[in-house]
Length: 71
Ligand SMILES: [Zn+2]
Image 1 (cartoon, rainbow, N blue to C red):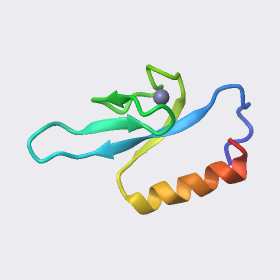
Image 2: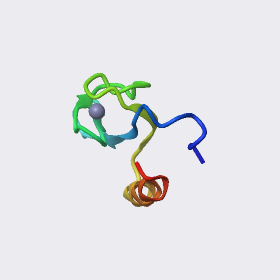
Image 3: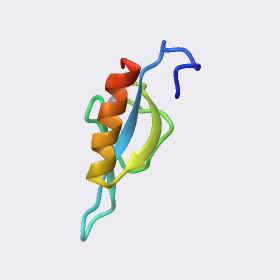
Image 4: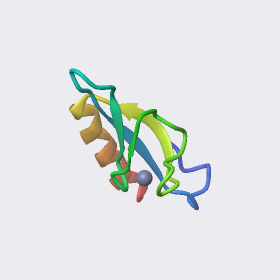
């Protein structure tokens, strides 16, 4: 999955941080840059974002996935 699109651009995902009294913040999985919205690309490192994830278990799956795809 995902190898067909060419590997010139790196891809990552947003890690969603929810706060009780503040707006949600999304953190780039690659460079750690924060964003208020889950943008299509990270404004800092330019990574393509697949989706945002909140569930930590999902994050583990994606990390394994990255190893498999060689990113
Ligand atoms: Zn980034």
